[in-house]
Length: 487
Image 1 (tube, one colour):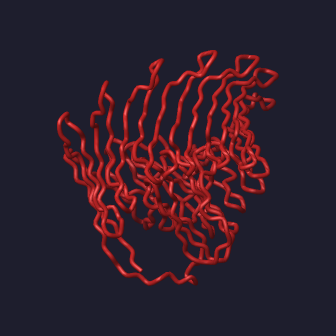
Image 2 (image 1 turned 45 degrees about the horizontal axis):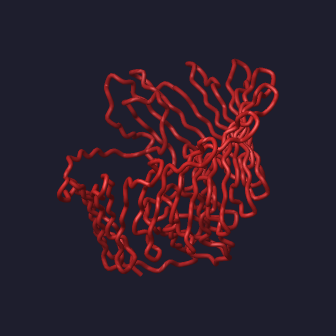
Image 3 (image 1 turned 90 degrees about the vertical axis):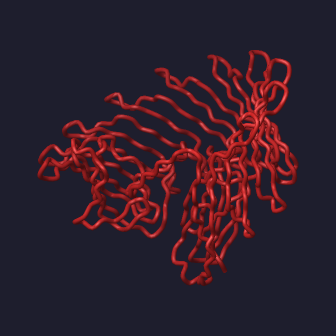
């Protein structure tokens, strides 16, 4: 079989300044790192953190008036890829996990005092048997020893769902509680409650609480917020969600509490065709007695392709056009043109145009962006991709030694993308796609699979633009990655 290596060029009419530097660590360093940076790493060759010989370091450009600084890392390895995820926010702890199977257990920062490296700070991380982070300890150097500063502690249930995170500060001789977050889940691992508390010196005091409800398909149907007023929980606001028989979300209702009852505030409504394609979304506000139209998006389809999308606003009596996207596809359902126009009183006026060209293998070879200058299209930028065909040996199943989930390609994508994974043993495989709120929007695989390499196509033509998550579960292996849909 053949693979294609993509070489991307960018051509633009605008001036371009190119800066290059080696990247060592994904995520932000402490704010005290300014322009002077001298980094040293100890460990394997990692994604986002390159190994450097202990006697060598890479000097990045720095202001000579600034102190030079160093950062040392230590790692422990494990035999599978894991991703830490806060189920409430959907965020991933990238600081303590490196994607190819190494956990960060310690990092030390030092500063140069003209003749020696002097310790500055140290962060230490601890994990349980499932590679869930259980503690983050932060210490500072006092000239002769490390002194405790702050500490985070995390606990988990048997399904590795985070049940608590605790923040403490060091007060000379002991750890003092500061705040705590608690998480509760149902039997399907859906989060049902998030509780925020702070420590007043003698006891934990409630601050705020979020509660979540789900239907039989694990679709979230409600989440509401409450705050603590001395002795009781007081309602704040509430979101309610409705779905059709195909699990398409049809309504989002937002309400606030007036002290005695829930009061309507805003509402989103979605309408789908018989193929679960979104054809309209409507935004309305409550005027005290009735729902009032505000904004509407209407989509027109040809087959499975969205060919127009029009946004309109309500002017008290009728819908008024705002802007329109028009898309053109070739015979292979490949997008070849994307036209954006705005409404100027009585007619659509061009704004910008994007065109796409493909080769015989349906790979994108050219992308051109143009803007409208009142009477004609003006070229703005162009991307060219060249493909080199090479012959490779077909994968040997016996060479698959570990579970892995690859980044989807392309990403961002519109409207489809490919997800690849491999399993070393026969396993029941479950591969699902979720929206940012945790709702399942697609089940791509849900069956027993023999060992081997696999790839699955995900068609998101019926979904709105946004960030989505795809999660692979196979045997005891679980991993989640992000993908971005841009229409």
